[in-house]
Image 1 (spheres, rainbow, N blue to C red):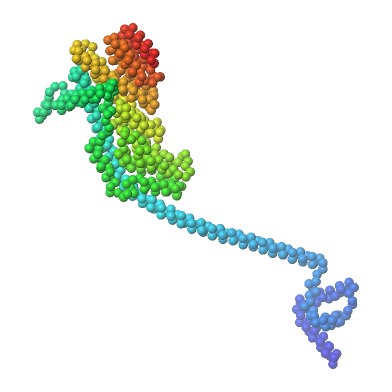
Image 2 (cartoon, helix red, strand yellow):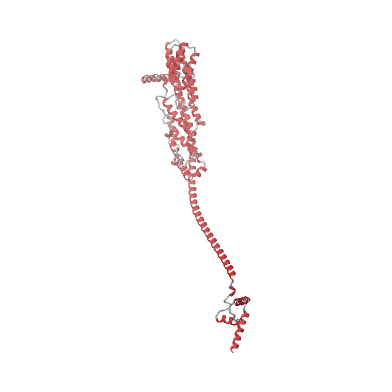
Length: 548
């Protein structure tokens, strides 16, 4: 029975072995090979049956033991190398993954930073946009206002210029009538009174033409007598050195007062922000301070002078230049002097030229009008004012530009006009006049004219440091020879050498040292042409050369 059961068990194992798949059979073959190798290597010889039984009794399934996994030393080394390579590859992949993760984290942080930056920029751009909108609206309103008011202001400037011109013309005509009256008293009616009525005429209504002139002539004589009394009371002062406004201050006509009242009302119907340039100036400076690049890109600095010009003209209309001859006495100048000058200012900043441009385009033309009309070149009081104004103008702009050149030419034109007007009337008494009273009148008239010519010379020479020295010198020497020398020749012919020397020395004192020798040559040459006796000529020449 036992044998039968043993055979049945072996049969069952064989059946099981038959049921094994090819892979298990390969493992059995490998197992057998391994047993044979162990035997050859000196292992105990064991029957297969016993080996199989031992394996069963050990409770170990052959299939759970994988002798195929047992390798030789070479195979184990190769396997370890393969595993090490796999591990290295895994480590590299892990490191790469870490790097990728770090890169992603950095990109996420950068994206978040960019997002915050874009949000800030968006807020900034929104603020900038709103600021631009407000500035645009304010500037549009300002431009609309100025487009309406600027022509009115310019018309007021033209009317003010007409007032100044009319006043200047009346003042010069009044002075010329005084000189003409005196000339007629001394030399007769044909001594330069070209436009005075020569005979009695009547108009279509039967009124005598020239009656107002005759009535005015009497009034002017009273004025001259009163002035001569004041001259004597003031001391030894030559009457010819007086001018019409030596004792006067600038007065304003009713027409000018009315015009200034109209000027004050020009901005009466506008908002407070546009009545002056302060609000617009603050907005433009805020733009430059907050958005300097936008301020530069829009070339606002080039438009600022034109934008503020109407406001400057408004203030110029009220400015008494000869009484307060300083630019800093005007509010616009003090406010615009530091316009845009904050932060880092480069030499090429266009805002540095805002005030010079206003001076060139607006102030200098106005000063030119003042010097041509209101200014009296022979007034000592007004000389300091005029010189200060011209110097201030030249300090702000290049003297070679058209506007300052016209200003300087106006000064010279005024002196040319005075000198030409001076030569219209007799410079020396008539040599054949027998009437002693008339001779005295003529002498006093010519003497007053000589002292007036001397004053013209003195005032002209004072401009040599402002105007071209050569131009002033040429005009001064020409005036010296034409209007001062004739009376010296007349007195020399009468043998009044001492008197001639006194007068000539007074004239030379008015000239700078470097011009005196030239003036002496002018006097000596004129005396030679007049054929003054050699003794008097030698005396005068030596005395004048010694003084020079």
